[in-house]
Length: 373
Ligand code: 5GP
Image 1 (cartoon, rainbow, N blue to C red):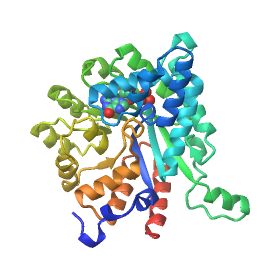
Image 2: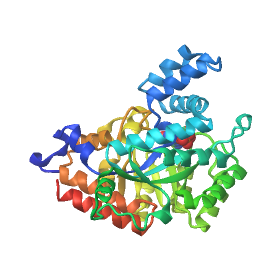
Image 3: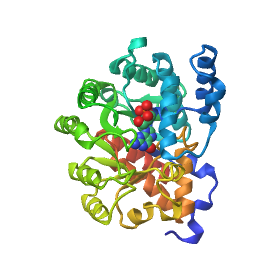
């Protein structure tokens, strides 16, 4: 796709880490560091809640098919679902994304209830927000009403202002996920919570969870309610062959879809007509064997068709990847040059759920980064 001499695939990781990037499809509990999971598992092992030696290899395993991933997610849920831990993992995940120059992150998570420890969906989300507040390695902008005065290209006049400008900064927004195991009422509760937490950076809704579980009709009332209320929606779509559901999802016209793998010819035709942006997760698709070989990945077809695309990680912890690695993988596999990779990163600004003020700030930041390329 690119000229031989400007191929980014040949660049070292440094270039991919240095390029500003936008992450729009990352699940909080899929992004937890292995070291943190092992530490949490050891602590629960010592309390006798789990047997550490039974779970250690599950955490460290690299290749997992899709059903095995969902078994791991159930284990992670046991390890992380208390308020203090939710706050800790949120903080670490933000720091990890910021450390590789992700400048805007939409982090999704499923609000969880655990009556035994007094956790409601709201208190779970408050613990997530607390995690955003406690990040200190980087400035986290997540409260929309505070952002009008913040700008990546602000001119410094004093030492304080200079320090502020040169601190790493990341915009974060939250998407609340509906798990496909949930009932209509529970999905509705999540949408209601999203509306109530708009001022705290919650910006949209995601439908995820084991794709072989649950029926589209169960979630539709909540998704329609979200749409009526103006909440943008991203749907996990076509991870397994379910053509009727893919059709129904495309007809619903979400703002974005994730994956888009098991599509029939008619689905591809409709998707391209619709221009619905696709969140592409290369390593996730290969590791879970939902795409048989990276060379056959639908990225190529969609990219050639100039369909809106965003490179994403899905679950950087579970799949041992990072957004920089996903960019390098795309560049080297599909022969994309530096300019094309930079443009791919910049194009993602158009598909974020945050408002025009944030888009403007991000575009300015990409422009100043491009002059340094
Ligand atoms: P959480 O929502 O608990 O923060 O993040 C983990 C959850 O995200 C998983 O339990 C699962 O419901 C969802 N998830 C993570 N990765 C995937 C994926 O690749 N496909 C689907 N359908 N759901 C996923």
